Image (cartoon, rainbow, N blue to C red):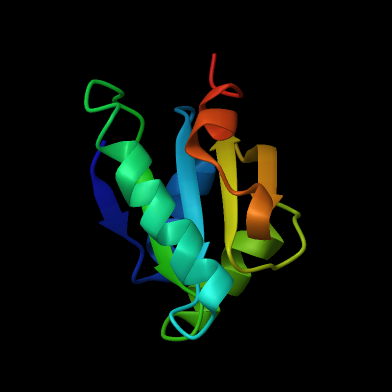
Length: 110
């Protein structure tokens, strides 16, 4: 799995329109809980290098418009940290704060 940074609302639209699974992690560099979740996710990602699902990251401070577009498009409440599994314009799973876990997230990808 490789981290892909979301830097535009067009990228959010492309994810929304895709019929493939994607994981989106919303991250705040100002939040200690978010930093801890990000550190854990980075560690977990290194243990599953063969998983080929795109893993997107968006900085909710620097890329506020994109972060809000994710919340609006996928009809989820904006939170940070937050992880989502999306496909076909729908959010199939989301978790936030201490519940952010790659293992739990991957259980929602079939």
